Structures are given as C-alpha cells and as structure tokens.
Length: 100
Image (cartoon, rainbow, N blue to C red):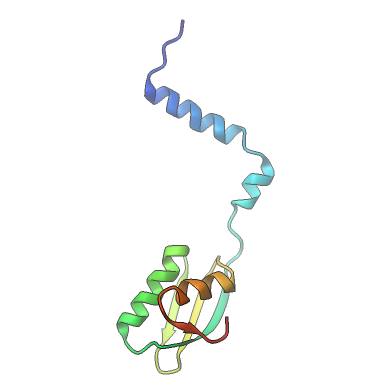
C-alpha cells in the first residue's frame, strides 16, 4: 500500500487539475493584447486622486500603465481590461467618467 503525505496529495491535485484542463479553458485565461483607453474623468484635483485612480486600475490589472493629466482631466490607461471595466474601476473610486 502506498502512503501519501499531505504535501504529496496537494502536489498531485495541482498536477491533476492542470493536466485535465480543457484547451478552450486555458485559452480563455490567456491575456489579450493590451489596449489603450483615453478617458475623460471629472472630479480629480490632486495627487491623492491620481493615486486612487492608479491603484483602482492596478487592482484589476497589475500590469496596467496609468497616466493622469490633472489639468485636462484625461486618464490614459494601457491595460488588458476592457474600456468598460477600466471606467468601472475608476467610477468605483467615486470619480465620474464622462466617456465610458
């Protein structure tokens, strides 16, 4: 009889799950090419706003690049997220996205 310790069982389970993944499922988890979204955002006035918006987007896509121009209210985001998801992340922080 073969005795398995808990570490062996967890490694086997991870291997088994990976080996049994359907190719379609794996393709769905593959990141898409990044897009750049230019958004007009109302209500930004300081560096705290810049930080809050940047962190909100990065929480959804850690690889995103966020540029905020306070005087014009423009936010440019290069991200894997859709335009709608990017706008929603910013709106969830309390800012108004004028062109979602």
